[in-house]
Amino acid sequence: MSGNRIGIGYDVHRLGGEGPLRLGGVEIAHDRGVIAHSDGDVLIHALMDALLGAMAAGDIGQHFPDSDPAYAGASSLHLLAQVMGLVQSRGFRVVNVDATIVCEAPRLAPHLPAMRQALDAVLACGVDAIGLKATTNEGLGAIGRGESIAVHAVALLASS
Image 1 (cartoon, rainbow, N blue to C red):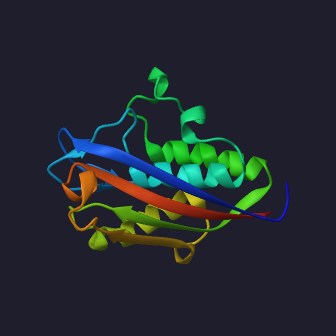
Image 2: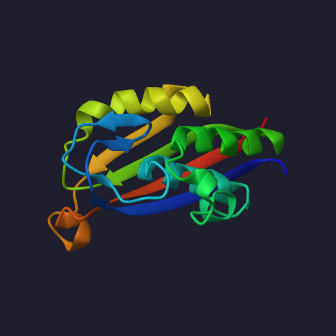
């Protein structure tokens, strides 16, 4: 494969159980965490799907199935590192990623710089190439009722 490749990713998780909430590799104080097989980092899950999509390499469910007990409670940063190994083995590097986190609470703006730093430690593209935004769903649907959190992500890869 050569040239530039773009991929999109999306993930959503129900909120429930005890906090904290983990997003972008950062632990955020919140009264609820997410219901998930791994650590439930919905931001990293969407980014992994974007990276895998850019390579036409399936999705995270194919690479890290929730039916496999090996991934129970797994660190999403660790899983992202495995995806980055695939990115590199296929001759690509991350040019940039961009993601929008959609949730009603908690307020995420104060945590975005730490998320960018944690993600860059694995993506190695520079924090200036990691765009993160947070928004609400204006009280609409399951996200608006505070029942879930979702992330839309895009990744651009280039031949190394």
